[in-house]
Amino acid sequence: LKAEALLLRNKLLAWRFRSRHLVGPDTSRLVAGVEPRLNQTALALLSIVDDEGLRSLIAAELVGEEARVLQERASSLEATMLAAVVDAFGSTEMPYVSVAEITTRFNQKACAEIGRPMPNKWVGSFLRNRLRLATNKTRGVYVVSATERSKIDALMVRFGIAPAINVQA
Image 1 (cartoon, rainbow, N blue to C red):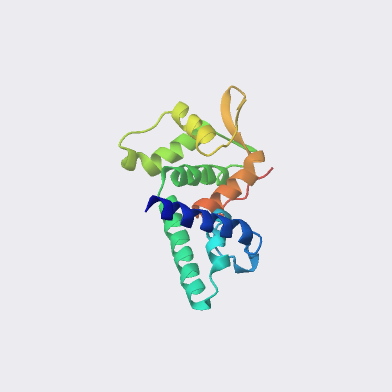
Image 2: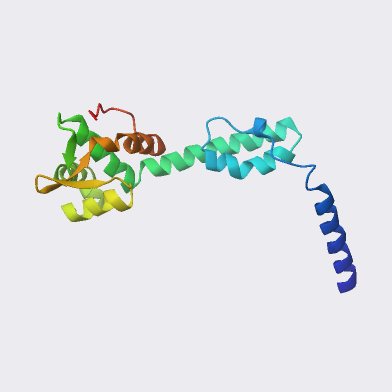
């Protein structure tokens, strides 16, 4: 049995080596409306499936998974923090928003969910480490600058938050 299994494995490996250039990714089969990473992982499967009906079922599953992930992200602490940043930028004329202002808005939104108000230091760390937004010290306080707008816009799309700010750079 072991010798027969080894022979079969060797034949399959030889076939894979001979056939490796015959099969490749078909980028025309990417699914619209799905994140690039999800499309990347599904492209190998979609490239070898020739049945259009089956490809449609796979695409529908991918779109459903994308919606589920977006819903999960929208209810996360990161989305709540991002909404606080967006609100803070929406209510100021300054080219920056203080971490203290973001903390106030975050605590208004998430205090019931977390159970206690979070300090400025925690919010600043969260902004830097989880959202990857740079904070700078300006006039003795830490702020998020309007130069972070491109990151904020990308995060808004990622977390499904409506673009409701007009940040002045």
